[in-house]
Image (cartoon, rainbow, N blue to C red; front, side):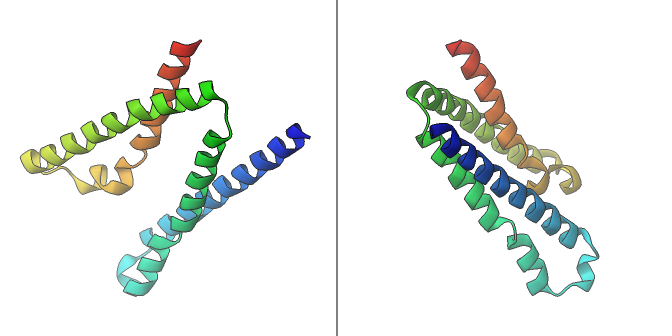
Length: 133
């Protein structure tokens, strides 16, 4: 029975992640397409399109942590303890470099930098799992 429940939760999480991915790609496509021709309300709506699927995905992931055993929770907590300071370091450094040399927004805007945050988390997971093996 537990394997059926776990599989059901896995399928739900995968569906939510797929929904997030589709909504994000759709929002980016809408916002990249001739921005000056679209009304502001439509651009704002497109920008907000992935917010709910992203919140659902994060909620589902956090729920998975709550349902895991103590070791897995500890590993995820350590991964977050690694990722959060790295994120602060990245954002602080980029902010100071922006003041110093004026970074190109085509390379270093929020839409380019956010992807580093989950990467920091996964790097933290690798470090934490190595520690507990």
